[in-house]
Image (cartoon, rainbow, N blue to C red; front, side):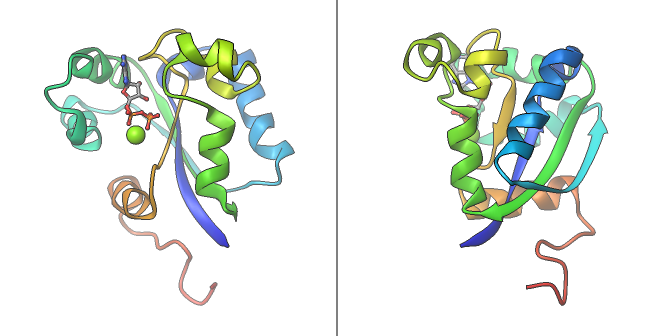
Length: 147
Ligand code: ADP
Ligand code: MG
């Protein structure tokens, strides 16, 4: 099924040009299309809104401080089963485990810690819609007339 997902290159990935371009190549080499992208520096309240489901968890504070630590890049990706495929390319959430179980995934290669795990990917169609509305409030995916 052709679809969409929202990816984020987290701030520490953007700071490393080698890792940044390698992450782009991961997307490219799998035939995933970048529909739109933008770089922005999240405010604390934007980061809290984006990660509201994790409020109260032990890693919440460090997650918000990572996401507000510098510019990040938000991308809308499209392709066959792209939501699942991008999650597969990213690999498991926890980098310290991923390096053993999935050595070739984006997070194993470019993650620095369980929090600084390089990238984000929507976990469901409904998360995608919520996240896309947050970052691209005036755009529709798919665009009108382009089913
Ligand atoms: P994912 O990004 O794989 O969807 P979650 O939605 O569970 O993972 O968590 C959101 C983000 O919170 C993760 O990408 C990571 O940055 C951070 N995080 C999740 N679990 C942990 C953990 N156990 N320790 C540190 N940071 C974590
Ligand atoms: Mg998640």
